[in-house]
Image 1 (cartoon, rainbow, N blue to C red):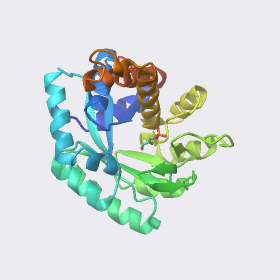
Image 2: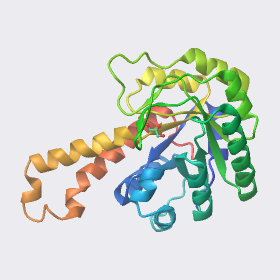
Image 3: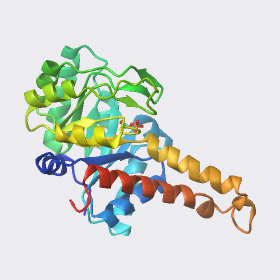
Length: 288
Ligand code: 13P
């Protein structure tokens, strides 16, 4: 199946009370591990690409070529959306050009009027070209691509203003943070989430910073309208731990253990296991 936008999979998720995972990709191994796991579990999936990761992978066109090639050659038949994560206005336009099927415009750092104006313009372009679009209100905390934010709670009225522009899905800050959660993290603000969902109705809500959120909080967030959950750091940590183990056990020094296809295999399997665990938790298995 060619790339799809995220609208249908998220509308179904919201109605069916589960969430679709957005897993960020960094390279070929990441992409292949996530696509293969989605296929094995018969789950829809969203591949997230941050602007930094896009640059690392030699640009958005390279990413589009790699993902489309894999979908065809690995016979991936589950719905896959290729989504720009935390895009700037310019980055969003580049991804639309390059062939992404979904974008996020993160205007959360602009004053609300400017966030609205820019989101509105991109909504019109995405509508015309058949892409889905995610907007953000209330900065997500933590560090992503060098931008550090403190987990804010979005203003539900502002969420409604942005939702009414015709975006496909909405990320609202509810005290969530990218990366590992600090010891003294206060947890998700379900009060904010509940207020946002009450005002935005059927709009699929997005939970960023999926790494390290306890399972009970994930389930509660889904019950309050979260239909897309972003996971990045957890796959990186799983890859790192498995790669470290391989090298610490001296396996790279045995036989052809230095071959990158062998060296990267444990990390690849670790990403697959992490994605599987998340898809099971989010309830997207067999929802393709
Ligand atoms: P984590 O890295 O905390 O999983 O967050 C991912 C994310 O929200 C990407 O937008």
